[in-house]
Image (tube, rainbow, N blue to C red; front, side, top):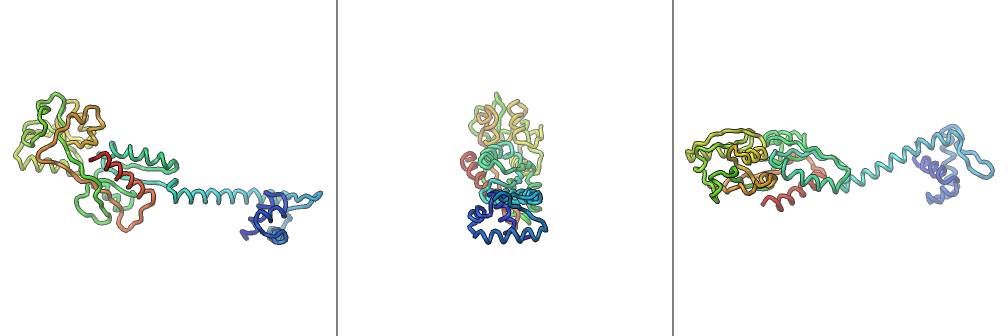
Length: 296
């Protein structure tokens, strides 16, 4: 198939004459006529007839034009898609996040990010840090946000944000009167701990053991938001970050700094030796900016 012949045939069909088609395509009329003649020989039938000084398409010409027009429409859509792809208006993003951010930061960042890019699609997966590292290393997701204290094969981790943990005290609890909670003040109290593979639970267990403090592990949950809801209902004390507490009415009022200070570092993890899409890089920038403004 000669693409130039098809292009000139389409122009003749759209303009209704060889001369006007030649003007549109910036070629001579004899050259345009030559290409149309070549196409008719290739097809084996006449595509146009002259009647009363007018150039009219034959039924075969109209049938061919239907196919050609669909082809050019597809090319036009492809050109538009390519343009949108480069300007981040098209594409798909898969992000894996630990629960802490999935219920706090991610909805805000995604809402703003997608509003500026109405044609992109996003999959947000919520998993433990261990699973996120596995998925990123296997390139099942574009990027992940998790605890990543040690280097793992198959990923590249970059520091994202350091979040301080606070003691979340139930409303009306005697500990409300203290500005700071020492770890020994947790002795004999009911604690809400996290039943997942992230290191917050293990850090608390080690601290209680080091200080020889006995406290009852009364409830295990996976989500920090669930822990905070239980705190607000008087079930027990939990270690909670400010991002989580801020989502619950009155939650920030129930936070007290813990001595010694407890904090954890979140990392942005990428597949090693694998190029990141423009959309993924832009989303990472948006996430960093949001955390700078709201998590410190």
